[in-house]
Image (cartoon, rainbow, N blue to C red; front, top):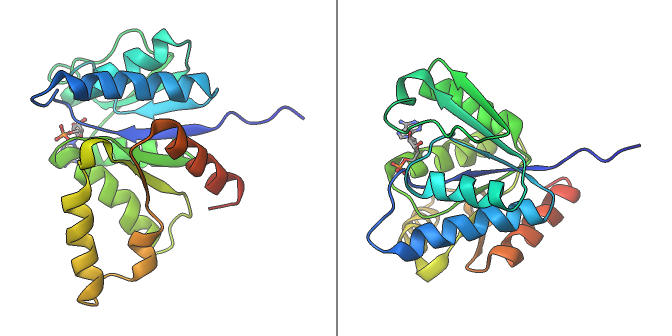
Length: 188
Ligand code: AMP
């Protein structure tokens, strides 16, 4: 029987940040996903790290699904070269569709929207809605302040250790993808 194609959903900034390093990181991460024969699911935009990520995956011959709300088609400029683009009614449906369509999740550097998407996945897992693994690409230690905040919440007894402890953290793209795929194979 043919093996089902795995999908990784990536959340990342709709901006480029202050250093070209971040867009290069996103583009290279897209290419690494494509080179593993894994489908990329993301927010469908052409701007910022999101655009760099998708273009990197496509240039490496990858399969890319974008999910974008109608209202953001202009602001985030829907990427026109994707393998598939789903246009949905609102932001909530976008998150639901991205979560349904993916086997695992990665957050690259980004802002408030990236945090919203990451915490949607983590909180749905926390209440048992899914068992899919998540990871942070921690280039230049971008996620360390957030991880410290989360550890503080664990120490104060508001977050169960495993609800944050299951989050994979690595600065190396290939190592991160390896760990995520191993979790998916093990049923997370
Ligand atoms: P940002 O990290 O703020 O640059 O945003 C990254 C992505 O998150 C963009 O595609 C935004 O459209 C999306 N986003 C922003 N706000 C929200 C929200 N409230 N719910 C879901 N996605 C959002």
